[in-house]
Each structure stands twice: as C-alpha cells, then as structure tokens.
Length: 464
Image 1 (cartoon, rainbow, N blue to C red):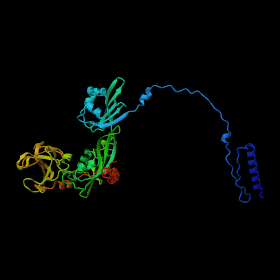
Image 2 (image 1 turned 90 degrees about the vertical axis):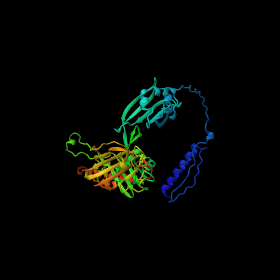
Image 3 (image 1 turned 135 degrees about the vertical axis):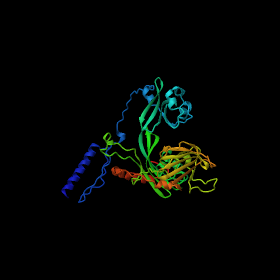
Image 4 (image 1 turned 60 degrees about the vertical axis):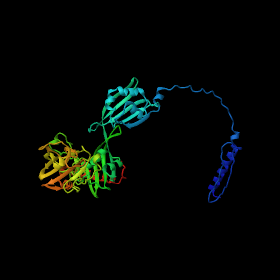
C-alpha cells in the first residue's frame, strides 16, 4: 500500500474515533466508501448538530412596560399629507370659482383674495396664467403660486399667496426664465393650424413658421394636402413650468414636394471693429437663413396678410360678379372684415382713397417701377405720399366697391403689367451671410441638419 494513502486512512479513522468518543449519542457516522488505491479515498460524515430533544430548556420571565400614548407633535403635523393641484386662470374667475376649481374650500382664503390689491390686479380676471395650489388634507389653502410672462424680455412674474401664523400674505417677484428646445413635426390635412394643433405646437410657433417662409410660400392659397413640416423651437419656463413659446430655431417645410429649410443665426461682430471695442462678443440683430447661408428676408412678401388662425383655411376666391378667375390680374383673399392688411415691401403710398370698383384702395409704389394694390378695404391706415416699410399695416379687409363679401383684392404690377405676387417674391434678391461669419454659420448649419433630420423622423403630432 502507498504510504501516503495509508497515512490518510489512519488520520480518517482517528478523526472518526474522536468524534464517537466525545459525542457517542449525537454522531451518526456513515462511511460510504473507503477505497484505497491509485484513485484516492472518499467518505461522508452526517450532521454533527445535537438532537433537539436532548437540549436543556430554560424559561425567562420579564415585565414589559407599554409605551405611553404620544400626542401629535408639530413635527408630525408638518409631515401631514399635502395636496397639490394646477390649472390655468380664466377671465371669468372669481376668488370662489378659482379656489373651487382647484379643489380648495377655504372661506378665509377667498376673503383674502377679494380684499388683497395684489391678487385682484394680477390674478382675478386674467387669462392663461399658470396656477398651482398647495392644500391641506382638509382642502384649506396653504399656498398658491401663479406665474406668467408679461413681456418678451426673458423674465416672468410669480405671485405667491401663503398662509402664515397671522393669516394670509401675498408677494410679487420678477425672475429669469429658462429656455429649453423642443422638436416637433406635422402633416397638412386641412390647414396649418389644424396640423400644428395635432402636433401640440403653440399658435405663436405656427405663425412664425408662416412668417419665416413668407417669401417662398403663400400660406393662404399655396398649401397642399400632404405638405409636411419639422420644427425646433424654444420653450421658455418659469419654475419648471412652460410659460410661453420662444423663437423658432430651425424649420423645414415641404410644400408641393419642394423642401424649404431655415435656421436662426446671429452674426458675431468682427473682432477689432468699432462695435466690438466695447463688447467683444456682441451679436447682430440676427435673422433666418437657408442652410446654404442665404437670407430669407426678401424684398417682397408672398402674401399681403399676416397669417393667423382666422385666415388659416381661406383660399383663392372665384369672382362672384364677373364670374371669372382673377388670378391672372390679382389674387382675392377671403377673410373676415377687419383682418389686418400689410404692405408686401418697402415703398411710398401712391394713392389712398376711393376708386370705382376697388372701393377703398391703397396703391404702393416700390423700386424698379413695381406697384402693389390693396382693394375693397374697410378702412385705410396710410395717406398718399407716405413712406412705408415691409409688413406695415395699410388697412383692413372689407367689402367696399364691387364686392359681395368681405375679402382683399391684391395685385402686383411690374411696369403696368399684372404679375403673380408669389413669383415676384421668390425672385426677389436675398443677402448672404457675411464672409467673416461663414465658418460659424457652417458649424451651426451642420447641427441644424441633424436636428431637422431627427424632427422629420418623429411621428406626426409627437414632440420632445
């Protein structure tokens, strides 16, 4: 027998004998196999735990004092449940109706709202202000916060009404808003506003879209079913609550199969210039450019009416008296009486008054012997000989002269010949981005391409 195996076997038997000697009743030794040879030896030992029946039993008795009842402390009261609700103010709100809509039933708070000058001047009767209330379990008011942005200056107002030890108190604060960007997209089925509503895009962004592409697309008569758009825009927030939409940062509009793209860009002032001597990082006013660097501000707008919800669904109109399409001489825009009419370009008022079938009419002379005509107005807001700028209000839609319903008749004449205003707008010159800003512009344009691609791949109506 190999000496190492012999020693192993001897050790094993010695170990087992010791166990039996010290634990004669508790140990059950199961020697499954002891194989001596070249392969080695295996064995198994049962559990060494003592038999529970043989363990001693000892009983301990100790008096336990119950805890005394503790009255609710200020700390426990401070941790009581609080209820939070948010809503938007309405013009018809009273103190009682606003609090009731917020789930608050507190006559003391309502009385304070009626008596407090700050609350009356900034909250009651105001529309569209974000309100959040903090209420107790008993639906009494603990705190109310209202936020709104009265000016386009990057700031917002916050009204706070809070319950104190002596009653309610109010205060007003002016704080900076924070900006975040959102991506969204949509498809035209009936009108631009219907599409932006489906995409949950604010009206102000829809109007900016129409204005940005106003030199290329007549949104009153050139939209087609299936046209689509993608847009990146700012959302301005106060205390984490969206308060207003900011500026469109980039956009793409596909009209009749043709894509138009735009981005906002501010040219930095050249280093070493006189303007830069006082502010090294001064930016220009900024504007919208194509991604190739051409300014989207054209000499002429495509439409004489600023796009709005009331004009969103109107199209070119069949002349009701002459029974002919008038697109070869001009364009008729149906719109409610009083809708603002604007000059499509800089110029001088050549005529402002009444003229036969045109009724109240304004004629504006532009450079290069171009003339625009705005007819059937309900009122005229300019006078002959007055210099006016692009987009300036010249009057309002009406039905004076030969008109059976309220609409604007608009003409664009070049050397006395009638021309399609949309064609003129597209052909008007644009100014490229300055050469000194080209590198910065190209870098920004690359980022915009990525943004627009991401927005275009989103499902219609979604936003991020």
